[in-house]
Length: 162
Image 1 (spheres, rainbow, N blue to C red):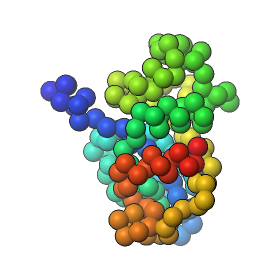
Image 2: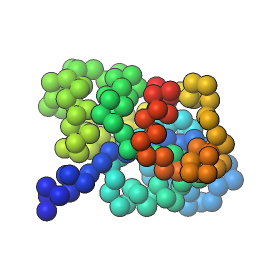
Image 3: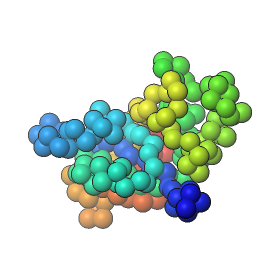
């Protein structure tokens, strides 16, 4: 049973793309639970049903999709922080990995949860995307907008934001 879970485990990147001034209380609380306090912040989570339910609840304010190993490595190297310090190979060695690439591989294969690492900042503070969003942030991705599940297209967006 454990081998089936590890095979079906996928890593998701969720990015907050809209503010929530006039949002319902449920949406505000859920973005807080996810750790997305500001616009253009991102988190790395897995695809367990609890997280997927939270993402469905805030789909008008957040976009998400399945991340590649290269995207996770880039996010860790460029925007990852442990406290006020950038993530380095020295931090990876303190948690039991030789390099940040090995740590990114462990996160990608769901051997370790990014949120459970000691002393790490759980959110990534990203920049607004270069050349802006392609569609309206109030419309779903499937309808030509930006919010909601975008699958593999999240990697292109995150690369423009890092």
